[in-house]
Image (tube, rainbow, N blue to C red; front, side, top):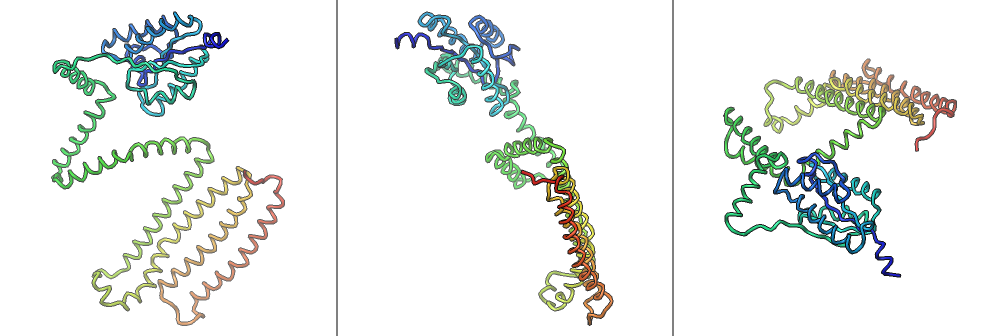
Amino acid sequence: MASSEKEQEKLLILVVDRDDDIGKKTGIKTPIVGKENNLEAAKTLALADPEESDANAIFGALKLYDELVSKHGKENVEVATIAGSEESGYWSDEKIRRELDEVLKTFPSSACVFVSDGVTDQLVSPIISSRLPIVSVKRVVVRQSESIERTWLLLGRYLKMAIFDSRYSRVFLGIPGALLIFIGILYVLGLMNLPILLLILGILLFIRGFGIDSSIVTKFRMLSKFISSHPLVQLRIFGIISSLSILLIGIYSGYMGASSALPKDVKLPSLSEDFYYWLGMLPMLMGQFVVGSIDLIFVSLLLMTLTYSIYYIVLKNLRFWRTIQATVTLIWLWALLKRVGMLLLEGLPGTIFDSQTLILLTIGLLGVPALTMTFIVTRYMRKIYASYFKRAK
């Protein structure tokens, strides 16, 4: 009985071309299922590139196929070739996984014999094992002579790949070429010296060594997918970037205003020599900064609030009413801080009955009932439109 069950076991002889040399050099689409199809593909690949190791792996798989068919029967054994892509890493492995699923739909297997050229075993085996068990691994490696002549032939072959194969030429020729161009530009501009060259090389080696470039590319792809996912997400991203840009411009404007108010002959040593002079200048500088920056800072915060108002009202989120309250609060704070800045700029008054001080107190006192009424009205409106709004999950 056990022997009968073993005879019914479905064996898949699988060849994996991780970098898709078959598709690139012959134009044959994968997956390739069946002895005749694989034989034709192996012949075509061998004619296109007689030194291609994947062709030898397919021939090895066909030989093993004939051996297993004689023992288990043709209906219980199948041979297939699948391929990844020229893009190494996740994209190649994902294509291998998809093609393996296609093969298993055509020939449902209970076990796999993995035929490898000896290079991709550790990279591909986990992908295959996630779909079906690997009962055996057969490595097909072309035997090379160890003589000096053969060594030079192999060296010439790899040198040719480094020059003419786009996958390797980008690394062996492209990066050094870009570096030489950059060094030439520095030399023409008169900026070329040993410390700068060492600094550039150090930065490049640091970025590549810690994989910073790959991390940046990955995060940029994730950000691109995130931004293009929904119009509301695009609205939030636009609002955040615009608000931050205006905020930075406002801070810079305030800084320039405060800098312009400094005496032209200011020197850093005088800071410690005349401490009380600078202490007296501080209110005026603060006032200049506030007056020069408060308008743009307010616009940036108001734009952010408006963005979230639209976002929440489209989502029917109750937080919309908080944005209304925040808008009124921002207007009150803007008027209050604007008046504080002007007061500091003109000099602190001697009494509270000064006109500027009275205006400041009036704005502060009027803001309290205005904010109170805003909170009362928004709570009332929230109850009226409760059927429209709902809490977001």
